[in-house]
View: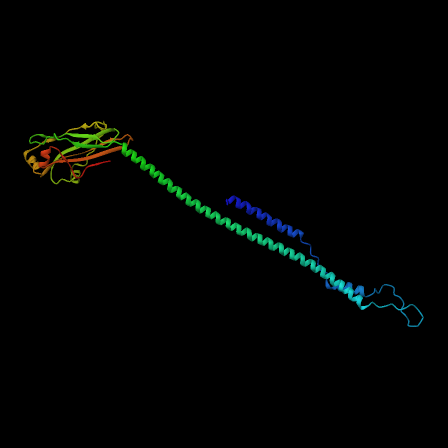
Length: 314
């Protein structure tokens, strides 16, 4: 039952309780106080004894044939009858008092019972209200969890759409590089977009060096620092299916000793760098790459191989 209906019924019952109590007080007869014992005794004495101030008849002198006959005294039955009448009168008033008291007591008991009933109804109403509040709080928690799940689902859907449509720039090397004694090391590098939308404002920064093996990335960063793209770099757009060729050339000439170390796998030519660009959602992305040229296998294929560290796309 709704809370408003319960409160309305409770108010109506309270009004009924008040009406019953007021009606019981108005309809109950006013109790008449019983005559005091002294007053009853005085009235009975007045009825049984003649008034001394009233004129009295002359008494019979007891002479035969002379004077009026003597007054006959009151009989015992009449005296007892008068006493019974006063007793009935007193009992009548006591009986009337008892009926009024019983009516008032019954009205009080009825009002008390109705009040207890109203208290029980109020208790049930409070219980129902607390239960409704708990149910509403639980429903609110469920709704909040559902909203969070919906937002998470929307976020996942949006993220999935972004991942499917965004640009992905990867770096590849060609097989026509130059690693020869007495010449600059040249590596043809291609930027390829594997996504479905163009990459905007793309710029590249790279580093081409020769180092002895092993040469971990952390050591390279410690010596030269990670590659960064300066603001003065030219920017370009890279479209899906249209590769951008960007050859790199060293600023040193390869010596015979260094060449032999590269061929024997004791040293390597490292090409590392970073490409930054914006996708169609105007979010900045970056691609880090690191290649190495070392060993007989690279000389046979003419390609640089991907290093084990230093590569990633965000």
